[in-house]
Length: 271
Image (cartoon, rainbow, N blue to C red; front, side, top):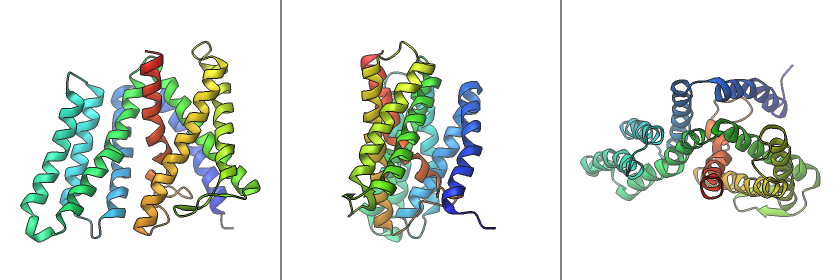
């Protein structure tokens, strides 16, 4: 009996969530970091596969090496490391395009999309490591993931059952205003419950609810941004690695926006 795509999404989630929790809460950094790299590498390859046709594999391999440099800089920061690692990630790709200038053609196309891959995927993925490195960072990243995926789920069911007004049909025809509201409310509620249970005293009720709503908005923005990329690339999913969930980038799109927001909030207000 075939499994529906909707059921398969829940089955995959039920398998991955315990693995995610055990890894984050009990895994040492030298296990977590390679997993973050593998997730980032899969997402970066999916991004390049969407925007480059055909795939310039030497440039992709250079991009993966650059991802490693950016993550290394996040794990072992020093004065100026962020800018330096980012520059070192970009320069080899730019040099490759320079040396292959006549053969590749469309110079701005290759330079721009290679660089965007590092800004959108590599740099934002590095905030996973940055967040874990903060005080109670492991719990905070579980908090971000719970609020983000909870808001996304609330938005999906609210939009499917009560959605009447399109949110941004040019980018995502199925997204609705009602779904967005459901995501904001769901994010606020999940944040409040999580803080009360696992991070008591770290945030007030008002702070937790407001932060959850902001993360719900960030999740919607991240999802819409990736939807825009897929619409331009004329693909339904970024990949097929996760049964029923599309690609890795399809699962990380909202977290790529929300994890930096969480680092910003904790650094500015709880540092």
